[in-house]
Image (cartoon, rainbow over all chains, first blue to last red; front, side, top):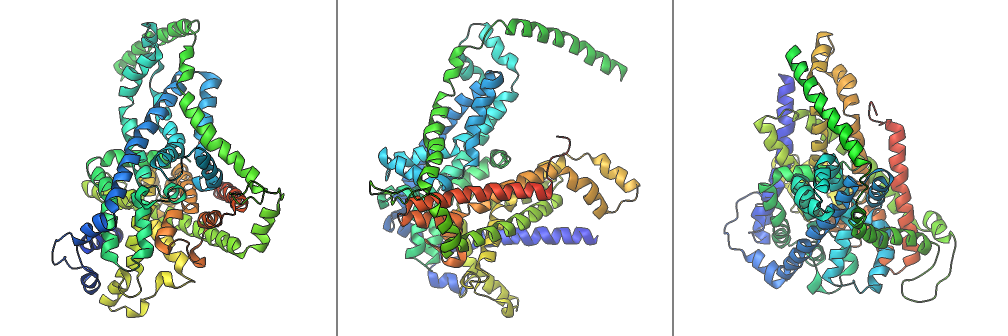
Length: 271
Length: 318
């Protein structure tokens, strides 16, 4: 009895600690600063999207949004493609070759991005990848390729080898087997990996901060960060930015929740 | 029962012959060499953009290169000596970071285990609460930072408003403005951010524990705490090792959250290793920043190793 009451109590309190701030941010994005400070918990007096108009138009978050869409829209599929090719080879090769390739690719997970930012910056400078979206796409691919190989290769290895063998006996080449057997059968793990990559690439801050100079090339997280200095306590404006930056991920979460949990947990179990 | 094993055996028999046959068939058919082309793009990318730069970091670390001039000198271990003995900014960031990691690892591991224990069963209500508790994980660090900046705002913030509303004005504080507490409040934010993610890892571990064990323990008269100590905790050891390792790396790298909540560059009481490396880099001390990066990597490895030793988190039966 007592245990059940304290169980419910803990869960209820924590639910409040998550729901209330998020509701305040959502309501607050429609308020004026004064309205927010006077009644942070109250419903907004009007739903006029003034703050959104200001951040999208006035502060040019609209173009940052577009940049984020371009970068993520390109970097996620490319990472998935390259990682699935490698994962497929790892699943089909045998013995030392398979083990060595997988080990080499996955080892990268142990290197934190902040640890090689200086050499990476120098390298990107030499390759003309600073201050443009291509550089951000390359950086996203590099930083998440190891974990994508880990997720996809790990899954493709569990598919029965006979499936692949049957195809090669028919004389089908490895490319056809990859397209018509490996990819369709791995759909669940590809979906999970896609979600995981989408969240990481969409929210990435370090690389834009390192590489991007021109305001026109900012992605959303970097544009938001630059708000922090400019609008110290203009919370409604900050909140409108938060909503805009979170919207695509939240919408995806509502519809694809199962894959989110699978993907992000697969990413976490890398340890 | 006997028919069941009978069919199983029958089913197994042809299986094993095909396996033997396919082995016979497999050994002469060599691996198609074209398969070696498939991992090439990934291997090339990792070699050029990850392995090479990491090795280069070691080279830069023993120079005084400023990132622009062609000339630089090899200075041996000077950068490392400077970091540990002459640079109070660095030792401050190191201390903060270790404190932060310790706080977050302990709090997040225990809290996510608690949530998982309360939500282990797959009832409808539990599934909804899990989805809610998981939610913050998908937000960007900068978004989470802004949400909590407002919660902690000393004048208009949610925390002080809520405390005032329930008559606890005495507990109101300035949170991030208080230098001796700021790091603790960011640790609270970090746990809010990622506890739901770790909860999911724990739930998977908890659901794999056979129910019969608890039933047997109950018959032996073991109380809840004894059951937790002798069944639950040992059985979730693999999950704990994942949670602890992941949380450690995550809180070492709390770069985005710190910059979002404290600004760039953060004030001293909130400076951690990754933000310090970035500031050193932004100050065009490339050689010194590379040395700090290597210390940073070393610290992550050291702490992870220490935890494994201290917690003896080797999964059972492996």
